[in-house]
Figure 1 (tube, rainbow, N blue to C red):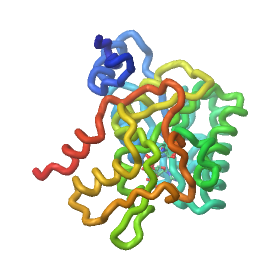
Figure 2 (figure 1 turned 60 degrees about the horizontal axis):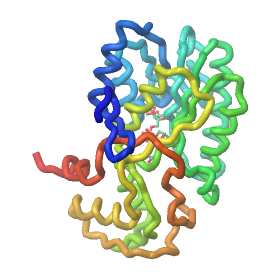
Figure 3 (figure 1 turned 90 degrees about the horizontal axis):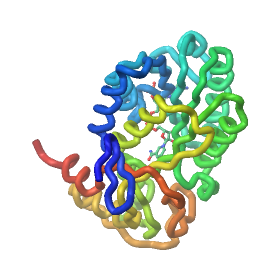
Length: 284
Ligand SMILES: NC(=O)c1ccc[n+]([C@@H]2O[C@H](COP(=O)([O-])OP(=O)(O)OC[C@H]3O[C@@H](n4cnc5c(N)ncnc54)[C@H](OP(=O)(O)O)[C@@H]3O)[C@@H](O)[C@H]2O)c1
């Protein structure tokens, strides 16, 4: 069965990018347009989210240091939020060093929530990572957990969207596990999702009511981590060899089989890793 924006296949719910944009455009005639501020609006997800929401006719502010709006120093924040109903936080820290990344997400989130309270923002949305609570051996994930806790403790209505690893991040996973010409990774499951599907889902969350809870997003299939990277390197004609090593760590974290995959019923992106790889490595 296909419903607008969502395809139901084998009992699972998939997001359909084009149909969802169409649905949102159609319902636009009935819905009021909103002012939505995208903090991190120049990043990978931010850029796609800005385009999607503008296509729907919303007033979208692109907030990032290069646009004079900085969630860590507070520069430009109050002015950007005047009249805004919704704020979506898709920032990332420039440094992933333990202390720096924690300071980034804590300071940025505190500043955002304080500025939102003054501006009367009625929905704070943040993008986090599936399995954060299972990955706390890493300073990065301790920082994401701190970000989530600040949001949950604040009086601003919220939705925390946790996504699995983006297809576009697989190259960084390979690099982080590389020693010379070999890449050592365990066969723990990964259920990666393409950034377009993340942005589509976030856009629909941005125009919906706050859930005051967590929502999980994942790709359509779970694949062993070593195998995902093997496929990625092969498609890119990268000479590195992937060695399956169950003791190998993932950004400093020892993984269990299901550390990185959702354990509930996530919303699933429709794009398959193999199809994306074919498309993204095709010569013009
Ligand atoms: N990578 C993954 O696989 C994955 C999976 C799940 C969730 N996530 C989460 O998704 C989020 C977004 O990731 P992404 O890959 O889209 O990030 P990205 O491409 O690195 O973009 C980061 C954005 O943050 C902005 N930024 C940095 N410092 C800022 C500051 N002080 N004030 C305001 N904006 C600031 C950057 O602005 P400039 O361009 O001006 O520097 C940029 O727009 C992250 O929080 C990440 O944890 C990632």
